[in-house]
Every structure is written in structure tokens, then in C-alpha cells.
Length: 146
Image (cartoon, rainbow, N blue to C red; front, side, top):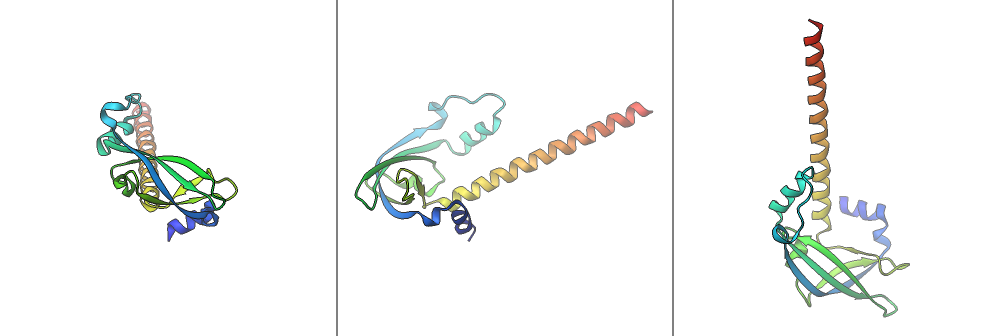
């Protein structure tokens, strides 16, 4: 239900639905092949530990006029698209005005859910930091007034 609303707001519901073929799929061990993020991006370390494997896939599809287009996507191992391999097909929607723009239909709800959870976690941490700062200022204010 929420995905359909999001697709409508983004205009994806007006795009043409098609099947794309996976041309190549490369499995990446993110723990060994990804450069380490800066120390202040500690959430990236958590993401690497939770999702150590990533699939980089190249896809191809044809538009209504028969022109062939290429695209790519990268997904972590918890995404349903991670299980796909060369020769298999994935459902997409492409923009009829610009067929190079596409949207992966499979796993969209899962990706949207994790985006929402990441936003909620960030908001929660921000509120906790603000409350801690407020309490620290209040405590220091009480100590200096004595």
C-alpha cells in the first residue's frame, strides 16, 4: 500500500513495465574490497558487518521501439535481488520519455522499509543527543548557580 503511494508520488506508476535480463553478476566481499570509511562514519562499519556481501549486476532491456538499454544495480545479501544471477530476468519500469531511467520493482518494499528504518534510527539518535545536551547544560547551570 505505501509502496504504491510512493510510486505514484514519484511518477513510477506512469512508467512502462518491462523485463530486464541480467547480463552479468559479480559477487563482492565488502569487508575486504571496500575502502574503509572515515572514523566518523561508524554506521558504515555496522553496515559492513551486517551486510558483508554485495552483488553488482548489469541488466539490459529493450523499449517499445526495440532499442536496447543497459543499467546496473548493487544490492546486499538481504535483498531479494541478491539471489538473481546471469540470464535471469528482473521486473523494471522505465521512463517512456527517457528509457535509460529505470526503477527496479523487485525488492522495492524491502528497500523502502530499510530506508524508513534508517531514517527512524537517525531521528532517534538525534533526539537522544539533543536531550543529553539539554540535560548537560541544565546540570552545569545548576552547579554554577550554587
